[in-house]
Length: 314
View 1 (cartoon, rainbow, N blue to C red):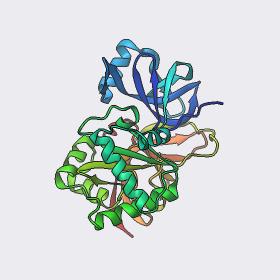
View 2: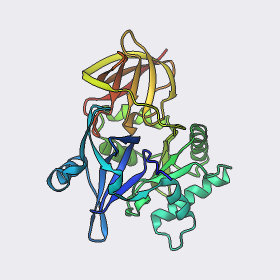
View 3: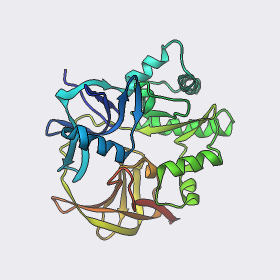
View 4: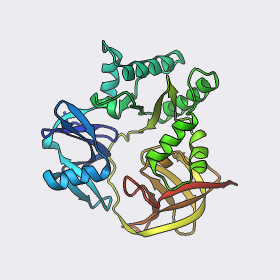
């Protein structure tokens, strides 16, 4: 049986490198990904973008890759070089029956039990991030992946209700500030918090932050269109359709004379706008081989100078 690789999965190599998968399917027989952890003695060290690129350039250049499909510098691993495929759904099921849980795992189980009480089954749900490979520490967040759009939005509805019932908590001021500083986004702090607070895709359980991520898997891998970058572009436009606004990547269809859609690969701007809202978008203009124009937000992990911001509701 052929193994399938999806965003939010992790893959591990024999050198003790763990990469986060960033796209479904393969390119030139490689899994598109980005290095997140390196094994040091018996511990996992989390790497930022600069550290990851530098480590690969010095010691493992075979994993540096330029994607012609995405017109972007990424990391990529040959399927033959993968020794462990960490799968979020399987990890969630393993944690549900694990004994001797640490404090982070206990909070994770408490969140799962709370959702079960609300009548939400945990099929089509997984756990990613540090918990996926057992690299969590006392300050780790809980990152859930929901593989159903319908179930994801029901999760959001239940999270909102549980916060209103004080069973869960909205992020406090310091939590929002910490999140804002980690994101290093191009919005000011007030704008960042305003957009985030209405999404209800995150909250606190026992003072620990958790996030909900939507990953609607396609039944079969579509042939990807090739896009070429044409430089930065800033537009103001109206959102015609935000049905895929929480997807990975997020997609917003817009009313604009030249650009037909906005694509977003960074979680900072997932679910950022709703249908009918007027938005300002800064990102990379991309043109497909068929002449279709779109703006990409999140062309790099840091997405410097790239953002989506709501201006008004029309």
